[in-house]
Image (tube, rainbow, N blue to C red; front, side):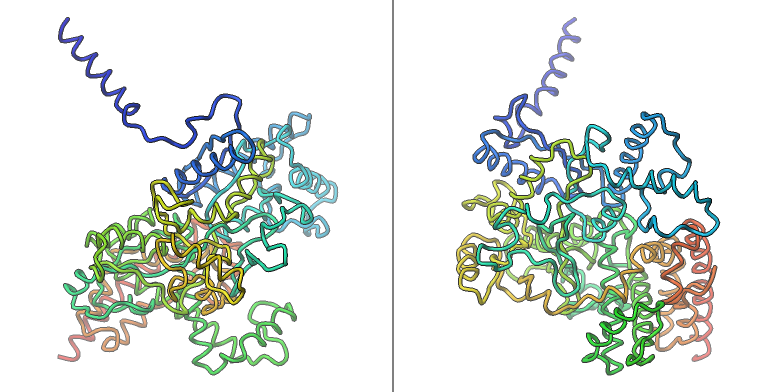
Length: 590
């Protein structure tokens, strides 16, 4: 009996501990009947904590009631996309069949079709059947009423422009306001000075269906102690530095099929190689002119209009292929590919990896923690100058949002000065985060140095409270954006297929890749093994040769899993060939 009572007492203590030591969420004053907001997000716990707390207090002050934010954190952007499409299809199907209409086996494909055009009936499709498809597509895209169908989630917070554009084209997002209804002072000052640009340097920061809230760059985090052990005495500055064979087996990388941010970083690396190839060919000063002519001509991919030399397009394509090969060599130096992009800077900080690719705020935060405030500590982060775009993490309203008015207010808060301060203020600073220093770039222009007196005064006021000086050249997001111009035509169409290529090229054939690369390095390096490198760097030839032109259509022409399988088989075979050739070339020199 005593023993049983002891067990029950222990169990009671275990159950009570979380309540005794729980952290306040900022909604302790919330009561049943007060507003609730449901948000799906890949954002981390620190961001969720601070924004739930601050928004609830802001809402209580302005509208008389706190808000409980119900976060749905199910994984990265890929998982969120699959979840939302599933929920919307299920909800729409229930509404559709509830009206006595038959559901089609291809119903999901019809309503989510990103390029559906009622005016363009495909050949071979019966006219009556096409009318039924158009009716179903129009019913989904024309309904924004939670009483009819809804995912039961109000907002999507985070991800990137690609994910938001994709969700928009699938019909999952709707504008929060009509253009004439956007609250004054949200995007521009009363005098018309823009607070939040529509975009910069080719990157989209906001559209009618989503609003950028914070800015990000991509870069390299590295550990100088681990570097010295590898014989590397110079800090990395550009993406190409990570292809050095001395990094072999030491890089931490994330899986681009699981992380949208890392997939964007890989696309950025390819984009930079395109630019460098164009500049090396002597076309740097003409890029704007040529790309404008190409866009106006609206010709087939790769076909140059009058006034644009074929050599210009050849340089773009050569840079694109070189970018893929650079990713291959970086992947060959990898110690691992992880599902979690945040794991890489943690491992670099602890010395488990010598360097890795990461988002700026992950790298800067971990460097601060790892170095414990010491200047010139072992860990550091760098955004390659001119080598990374500045992209926005958006907030958007989902179709059929049940709590629309509260959702709109959340957007207002995020884009207000009070909401933007949370991204960059020190923890505990007036108006800053309560517990976590988020160390991210705000999107509002008045947090950075400016030639406009009002914006400059606001920057000076904020600077007294920010964790870092937003005027530092490597931290001024607007300056960084001006140093990098993103050309969507060069790489945007390959964003999806690039994820699968990296998987086949560097992950599913990873053992063979590293064995071949190590063999080449031990045989004298790439320059000493031209035949091995030719085999090593061969781009996929099945089911057809992968080129800049063919790559645009492969995702539509072939089944994704079939591509992955065939590419993986080819890469494993060619890596085995490269390892054998490296050994032969080494023996021939002896």
